[in-house]
Figure 1 (cartoon, rainbow, N blue to C red):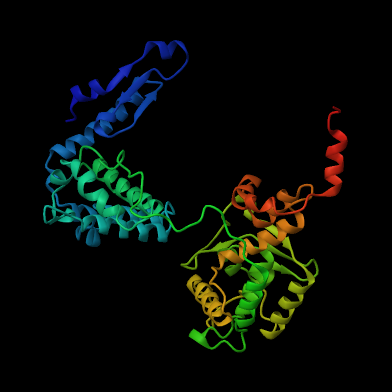
Figure 2 (tube, rainbow, N blue to C red):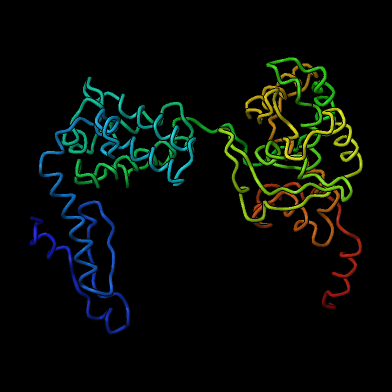
Amino acid sequence: MLNTELVNNLVRQYDYKASRSKRPWCVDGRKHNHKRKFFYTKQEAIKYAEEIASNLRLYSSGRAEKKVRNIFECEKCKTTGEICCYKKSRIDDVANGTIREHSFENSMRDINFLLNIKINNQAVGDKTAAEFFGDPTTVFTIITPATTKNRVHKTVKNYWASYTDFGSYCVKAGYADHNMFRETRPKNGGKKSARKDKIDRVQRDVVERILEQLPTGNSNQLHGYTKCNWRLAAFFAAQTGLRQGEQRALTWSDVDFDLRSVAVNKGIDRYRNVAEPKTVKSTRRLRFPPVVVKALQEEYMRQGKPPKEDLIWQDTRGLTIHPSMFIKKLAKAAVAAGVARITWHELRHYYASAQLALKGGTKDGIWKVSNNLGHSNTVTTTKTYGHWLEDYAEDPEETAREDQAALRY
């Protein structure tokens, strides 16, 4: 039986809200680590209150004595298939498409780190849920320092998001009566981020020198990727600004030699899963200069006029190449060229800088560059590359029109 007294205490009615045609019935579960919610009917409110009471009943029934490590992962679900631990619930989330595989891997890494933090010479995973969640002071004295040590703030936030999700599972499953991670996210990291606030412009001569050192498909014998023309891959990225996942997913059917364009309508992740592009605006058609068309035509002939559904950049098995290989190839070419290393994404930045130099000072220039990059809006483009715009000359025609429209003094 549910605690009827607790359910009644959670449910409240606000008459003034009913007079204003708002939800008058309120369930305030904040004391028990649940959100405060408003409902139109008493029945809806009672149903939510019973859910809270049910979790508290599970907690009081002895579940809190279970070891934290066994809450995270148990042996029972491996044989029964039931969702009886946190890891199995996240595996099901991956199967249902709620989260991606890399998010699952990251969360498992984060929780495993948490389980191995020691409190009074005992790992968190070896404590019972009651022992661990019953002393929230350890969050500030032990868990926060251990998590922030040698990590930038962004990484710490990612770890804490995993902790919070695990804590929420423990509450909902009746292992804890509160989630002590929800309101305790650290405001700082243990070290300063090396990332700059403003993106540095990649110089043209640096890109050209790196391209000279990159192998073509005929000469590349490293790691068996004899089919991939790395020089063309980097050249194409610098001339189109495609994201790496978008470029890796390109097939010959996406290229239109007559229109000098490429259709960007999909992306591929590190697990070779093909999905829609990053944003709605990422689905686009890009035109490129004749030099790119010529290079692609030569590559098409070099590959022996492959079927249209074949990937443009592939390994010897006809599969997409792992993203780490793109980074390694660029790094090796940079060392050979005697220039600073750049990432593959910086080829996209190079394209942006070249496009802004051509169109940044013209009417609708930012809008055109934003569309080419597949940004969701021009705000993203301006926020990312706006500090470069002051370096580019103004459009004289637009300046003249502004002068004509100015007030007389």
